[in-house]
Structures are given as structure tokens and as C-alpha cells.
Image 1 (tube, rainbow, N blue to C red):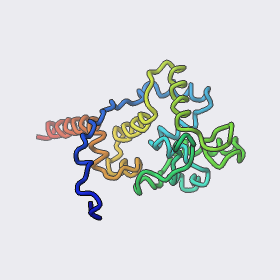
Image 2 (image 1 turned 135 degrees about the vertical axis):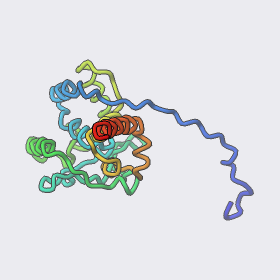
Image 3 (image 1 turned 45 degrees about the horizontal axis):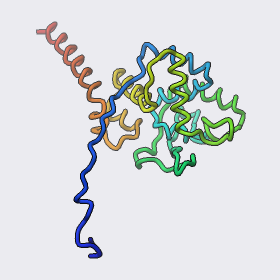
Length: 220
């Protein structure tokens, strides 16, 4: 239209499809021990431990390389993602500029990664890799692994993205502020994080109101 090659924008006549709302689920906190126990048996413990400890997107988790892990700082750098393009598993850029970030990882989780690196003995540049090629793992395979672990542990299936929700929910419930959580998750704004987890923060606000009410009641 700007070049006057067409008289009008045909896309204006399109009817946009309604967005499908997918119910957010989380891994029940009282079932995490059983989940990790089965993950150890299945050989994927380190992967799902890091996921629940950081809330990385699936592609970001698979895109981690050992050069991204800083044991001295206790951090990981998120610099790339693994995706499937035209049937080929390959590296790609992250979703937004906010997705490029540095995340502080719990010390115990860093110790687990260090032991994994020693055990892998330089087999791959990737932290989590395919034993067939020593290259990146297919995102689809990771979901199949998750469902296999959950089935064997007797847990209801959830999406891989729900592990990210599990991390975020635990973080909020344990006092992590929304702005900090937004930076960890790589969201474009704290407002988006707040909207996404409004159901969690609403309950937290009620708890806060109750505590303030109890304090005032005892002092008036």
C-alpha cells in the first residue's frame, strides 16, 4: 500500500481466530520427590532439576552449552535456543532481547551440573545432548521423556512448559518479587508476569492482608 502497488490491505478482511486458552498446571509440590526419584532412574535427573530450579523455556534449556555455565559466579547465561525448522533440529536466536539473560542457580544445582560435566568427560559442548549424535536434543524428545517419567512415577501428565510454571509459582510463594521473577523468566515486562500468575499473587495478597489484619487487631 505504501508503494501504491495495491489499493487496499486484503488482510483487513480476515477474521482472526480466537486464542485457545490452555489451563496452566504445575507439578504438585508433594510429588516432586517422586518425580525426581524416577528422573534419576530414567537418566534425566539433571535436566529436569535445572528446569524446575530456573524456569527456562524448553528450547533455552536444550541450547545451554558448558561455556554458558559459570561455576565461580554460580550462574548460567541464556544465549540461544534449540528448535526444529523444516524437520531439522538446529540452533536459533532467542525470542526477544529480554530472553538473553544471566540466571543465578542454587549452589546444590550447580554442584549437580559440575558432577554431570565430569561424568560426560567432554562428550559434547551441550549440557544436555543426544547420545546418538552428541548434538542437541530434539524438543519433541524432551516432552516424550517427561511423559515417560511422569507415567512411571504415577503422576498425571503435564506439558513441559508447566515445569516453567512450577518454578514461577514456587518462586512467588517463597517471596521472590515479580520484577525479579520477570527478569529470570525473560519476560518483556513485569506486568506480563503479573498477569500470567495473577491467580498466585491474588492468594498471596489475601495472605498479606490477613497478616496485616492480625497485626492491627493485636495492636489497636
